[in-house]
Amino acid sequence: MRQKNIKIVGILLCVLVLGTLIPAVVAVPSVPQTSNDPAEPTTKVPVAMVMGRLTNVHRIGKLIVAHAVRLRYFGWDFDRGLDHGMLRNQFVMFRDTMRLHMFHMGMDTMVFGHVLRLRYFF
Image (cartoon, rainbow, N blue to C red; front, side, top):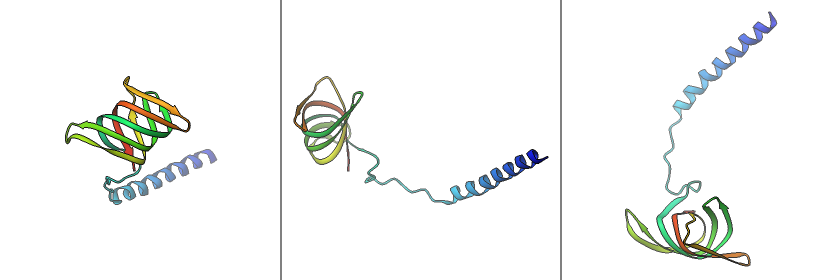
């Protein structure tokens, strides 16, 4: 008899939680994503040529995540056409290609070459 009471109490607690959780979730308005959200990287250009200094370089397969001390880029965007500029003191993420060369110089890494999907974090 005691085991049956425990099951009934458990089922009632589940119904109570679901009965209050679903209306609470529906009542909360959704927050629109802002373009300055630091959790999501901003895509700069899909295809780029980069040249500059990086620190804290981490390779994850063909993906490279690093801190750009001073990274100059010249890229081609499908929407805006040619785009060029410099990224300073930002975290960057890009896909390695066969034409990317990395030279380690002490604590810094010099990069030169073509990359795919150049993104940066604020």
